[in-house]
Length: 71
Image (cartoon, rainbow, N blue to C red; front, top):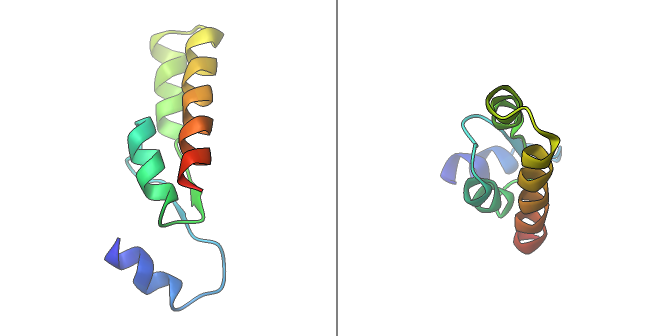
């Protein structure tokens, strides 16, 4: 969090965090300090391991709820 705060003092651009975020809780925590959260690798993992749209929809639904709570 210290790095994010430091970077934000040097730019007025939105700051997104995205390396290593794979759980809903991690996304929620990062959304509290950043302007955006990127979870691309986790979505690819879900598609490759499960292949069902329901698993992907469930994850994205949970993610959306968590991000709304962090806002």
